[in-house]
Image 1 (cartoon, rainbow, N blue to C red):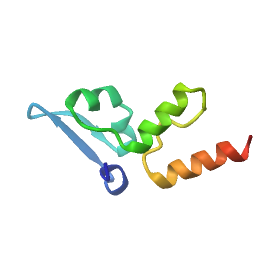
Image 2 (spheres, helix red, strand yellow; image 1 turned 45 degrees about the horizontal axis):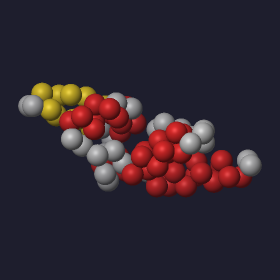
Image 3 (cartoon, rainbow, N blue to C red; image 1 turned 135 degrees about the vertical axis):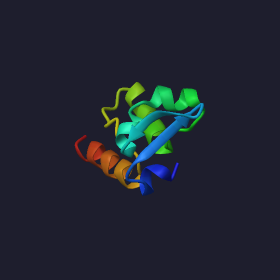
Image 4 (tube, rainbow, N blue to C red; image 1 turned 60 degrees about the vertical axis):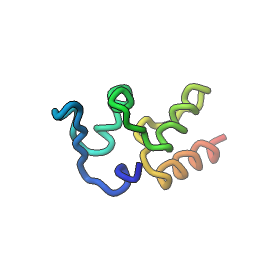
Length: 79
């Protein structure tokens, strides 16, 4: 899961073929595909997804803990 924090570009392979490639934000936008291949999403994306399911408006591109903290701080600050 550190890949999202250290990589500029990601190539995800499935069955010896490129399934998706791009920046971490671009690649992880394909969450269903990533999970269907058997890879895990960054924990911060899972957290933000769960918050969205509960009605909290969060960004879909939160990949790092720093970004998550900033996003959540902004949400709480505006309440």
